[in-house]
Length: 166
Image (cartoon, rainbow, N blue to C red):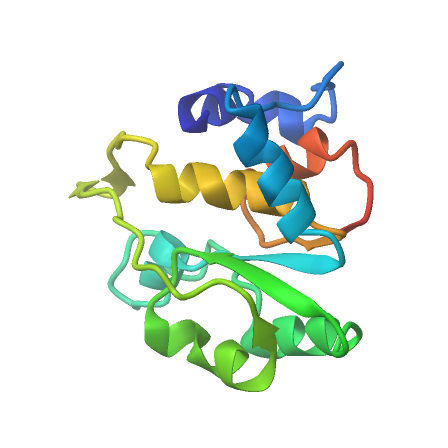
């Protein structure tokens, strides 16, 4: 899925990419379980990873990759304060702990494997079960609060732009 999304990056940006049917799981009972779990839950994607690396003044992408501030997430999520949330992030615990302290998050924090770097670029890595589960939880959330990434854009397309907060 990750490789597929990267291949379609320019089409996603150019709004040419459309889908007839959203991606599904082969395990239909698991998909139904996720749909039930995500009823009335707000999905949130918080992109950090190499975006945060770019905050290092010596990083080659310093001042070129925008980052969505913590306060933005706090403000948008506060509009749904009475709701429960599912957080998908590649950030560290220190970067997202404040959300777990302030909001009703239904999923535990999970450390994501970051792809090793090769020069200034991350190298291809295996799409993990954790990432796949994140994808389907966000896909079936009531509302999807997007991060600034191809991952969020791809999910937005899969959701057919329905209930996505850009």
